[in-house]
Image 1 (tube, helix red, strand yellow):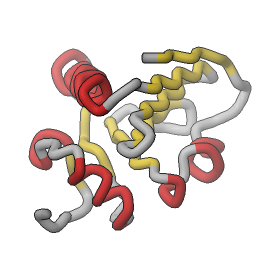
Image 2 (tube, one colour; image 1 turned 90 degrees about the horizontal axis):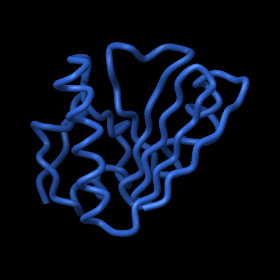
Image 3 (cartoon, one colour; image 1 turned 90 degrees about the vertical axis):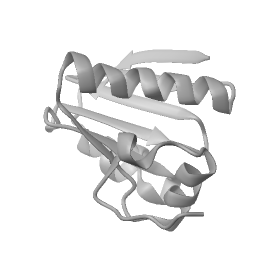
Image 4 (tube, one colour; image 1 turned 180 degrees about the vertical axis):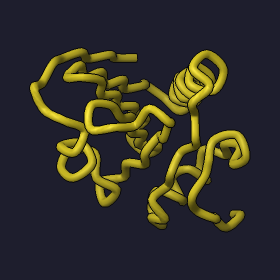
Length: 120
């Protein structure tokens, strides 16, 4: 696993509309804390998790599916059980993102919201 940390004087909208766009495979990991200074994105195909908080940027690239699933669960568990502000992962109703999520065979009830997805 490779974790890159950096800082940028920007807001989350640079990620939403430029760096972590749904057309590039990114879903949003939504919490009640989401704001212009905070956000998280997940790419199920690249095995990548991106976090932004008040200028601090953390990009986690996992080496394989198993490592990614473990890291995604750790991240979601943090927001679910420590912060109690996890809303769910929004697949952006994007067919490619939905397929990438389904290919990992993740628990829909544990991870998702916003978009009904078909069973494979």
